[in-house]
Image (cartoon, rainbow, N blue to C red; front, side, top):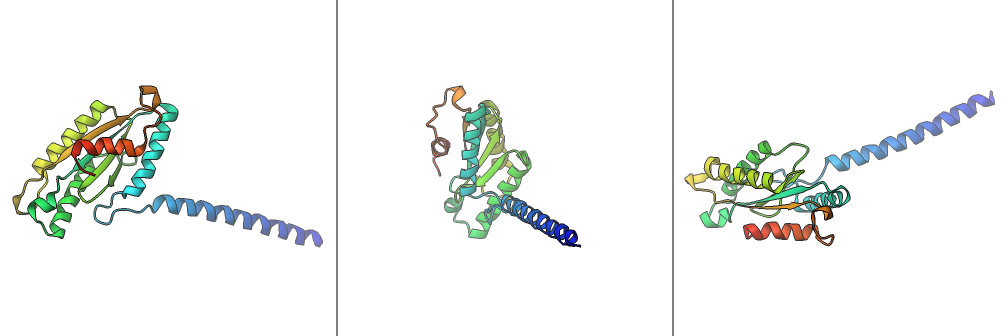
Length: 189
């Protein structure tokens, strides 16, 4: 009869261990799925993007896998046209909706870096491909995105490619350097 108690105790210990592991896995999944998003655009925040970029740089240094970044600036659209907040947010949402359709879901990473600047990371993209994509984004946004009062949306794009140390990039190049290079092209950030 004592062996039933022993087996019951062993089963209880195993089930508590399994519950602990399941709880830990559920917490990890929750943290991965519940990343803070920008409330207006529903894109990643700047902090999340900085973390993801560090991962991309480290990955590229390790295996030479390149990535490109495209910065899209709406050229201080809100201040130039003295739009109300909701009008400016509508324009921004329309731009983001278009970009979400064009980027590869689950592969490319998009974030709102500040009021009017969006940053898109294209893993595996060459500089030429990123420049072509950026030009398409710019042309479509300027010609097809509707703005209040039939205003035109001035868009500037900047492109930077990072291919790790194997492609001649210095090991000291940081995420901040990459963002600075991209932002210098659009005179923003």
